Image 1 (cartoon, rainbow, N blue to C red):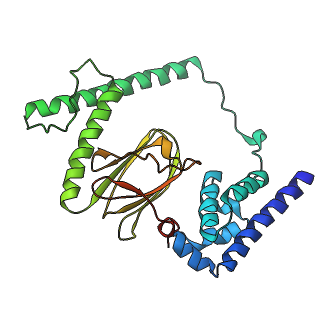
Image 2 (cartoon, rainbow, N blue to C red; image 1 turned 180 degrees about the vertical axis):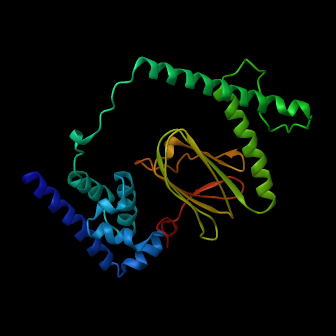
Image 3 (tube, rainbow, N blue to C red; image 1 turned 30 degrees about the horizontal axis):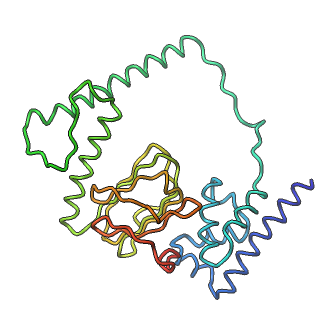
Length: 270
């Protein structure tokens, strides 16, 4: 009972602090939402401590951090208060999967083998297809090792890099910049183009990739920058000096792949 009361007080303090800080800056909920490029109902839910309406905990933390930064509150303190107030998961309600029979395990293994053979066949087909129709190879394209000397993951990576370079050149001709993101770890991502158009916002799972295009300069926010590889028009972008101590990074990218720290007003959506 004491734990429940402490959690309720912490939530009340979170909502009260957010509301007081916003009003002290002379902002309405709608004005603050416009600056953050989010639905006003998200900020209303934060101030009302209705965290369940925002979905998973990682989304609540992302919105809470961005809102606190906009209105001058301490993101670290509010995140700590939210951690103390967040309810513990009820492990008794987690369903337990019935043990698989021997035949089921054998069937699953057979399916995995078939999928592996199919993937290997697709990779082999993609690598041998250019041989039927010779084309000039750019000096910038990476050399592909002979079949049998590289793993499937390496071959797929080489194909993806070649496609990224080709697509980047095409978009460069039309005045747009192509941004390619590869995620080795989970990360929150927010990307706007030079015209203020939102290209993407959300949480990306590890071992995945996203490719976006827009007019430069691109405004990029990464919640876990060390876990993200960034390329612009096929060129790798170094984030040295742009990553904060908490692992986040906010920067601008021009069409040549040059990265620069995002000004405070731009970072807050102003």
